[in-house]
Image (cartoon, rainbow, N blue to C red; front, side):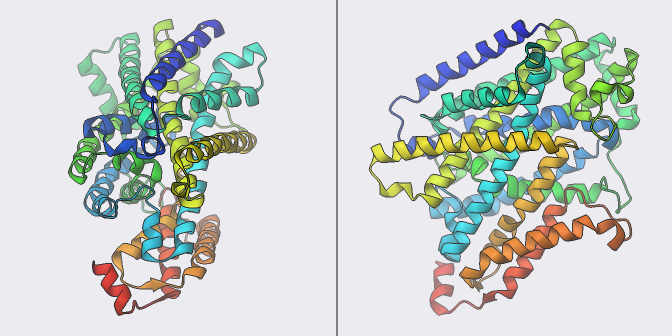
Length: 500
């Protein structure tokens, strides 16, 4: 595909987003920016959440990772089901009962000022890192497909990409994003289905042959029985469950959408319809992964020895496989579908993340509600711009350091940064004890440092055991124990408040 064609596609796509933004951001207020006036239809929220939950990492890394990890990721996706059940029955009722805008204000009501700020701080770190890694991926694809041949530096690609997100989100916030993400989710799902169709057609597979080929492929193995292996099924399942609890249920980004529903019942309906859909979509991505490598083999391509697909260690960078095949080997129609799909899924995640970062900082640190609406608007828009700059800086740093699959990088980063949120919320919900509030931040930092130490030496200390996504479980457990050490029994007044 020519760079001119791809640029035209991108320009047309963003023109649609900006039109949606203009139409939906009229008379926007802080209330509509943060929680869409608590008036969003549940079915719209459920559909919009698909694109937000997946991101470009899923679109690129999950199919690519089939090469080395087969379908082991399906165990993670099945764990999502258990995680969403916990969110719908435990966390959502709590958030709606307290009428929260920022979910971290629960920690202030439960423990105190420093617990609240600690939770919000770790969310900001977690979400900014995760969102930057996701944006890094799509910026890399655009760089490879378009801007390298034009001599445009990667840094300019990143700045322009984030500028467009800022442009269509800075005014309407969540009210706009529910509409843009609905459009982008529809585009992404269409692109996945069409990519599978185009490759099946190129391989002359009927639908029945497609199912048979995928099922019989060694790359479709789901169950791995060695508990020391980072692909061990039950370890992956538990990781998927807790990843969902923290990266959805304890994450302002995804919960902000759920809190925009009209009632708790509608929010739960949204979540329980969303759950089987998100698992099914992940099955489509894994199917796509098997087809990618079947297609490459049929074309006589030795991917593992192609210099442009290797990482700095000289091994196959599986994140490059789908972009390379789509932009150099697929038909023109299939290549266009890929470009639109990666843009749709990445920006559906990134725009929502930028809005949630703005929301959390404005509510949790600036206490924006104390100001008149005009001043709230100025502070909110300045904060939105500030977080855009932060994302650019993180992406450029990661560009210099990246050596692994992004799906691994995102979840491992989440294991360290969401662990404090898991420990704090679990301690608040499942105990009646109070914390020595001033010690919460150092306890959480110490828990993260201890987790890093254990994970770095697990092979020699734990008889060859390798940590995968379950880093989160270790980190959350260590921080929970640390919180227990700095806790005390609740007095009568505190105990009564917990029961009210």
